[in-house]
Image: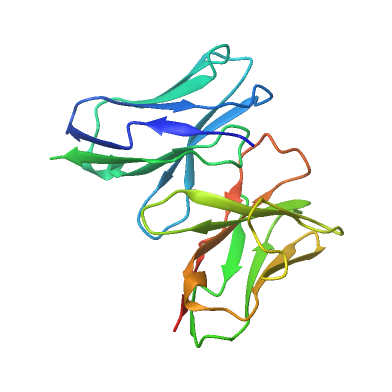
Length: 107
Length: 117
C-alpha cells in the first residue's frame, strides 16, 4: 500500500518565521496532493492542494511545491502566526494521510 | 460549500453495546465516502472506502464483522461498531467525495468520539 511520511514530526517556530513541512510518498500513480490542517478535536480542513501538472501553487501565506519525480511535496507557511499552530497532514491521492506534523508557533 | 453531517458527535456506552454512526452529505451526492479512525496525537487511519450500492472496501487489518459499513443511498453511509469494547474507543471521522473521482478534495464530517466503558 501507499507509504506516506512527513518530516519533521514536530516543528516549533517563532511568530513571523517560515515553516516548511515535507511529505514523501511511494505511489507513483498519485496525481492529487492536498494539505490539511487539523486543530484539536476537530475535522481536517483543506488548506491548499496541487495537481501533478503543476509544480508550485501559492495562496497568500501558504504555498505547496511538488517534485513528482522524487515523489515528495512540501507545505510552506510564511509569516507564521499563533493561529497556525495545529497538526498538518499531507494526503497524496487525497485519501491516504501522512504521519502528521505538529506545528507550534511561539508568540 | 459541500457539507457533511456526522452524528452523533459523542457516544459513551457500556462494553458489548453496538454503536451506529451516520455520515450524511447534505447538499451533494456522494458515491464514495471514507471512514477513518484517529487515536490521540496520531494520524487519520483509513478503515474503509464506502461505495453507494456495493460492499465497502476494507483496509488490511480492519475487521469487517466488527465495523459494519452500509452505504444505501447517495447521501448516507453508516458505520456500526458491533459489540464494542474499550479498545474500540477512538475518534471516528467520515468524509465524502462529490462524484466518483478520487483525486479531489474530501469533505469531512465533524467526527464522533466513541468512549466504551
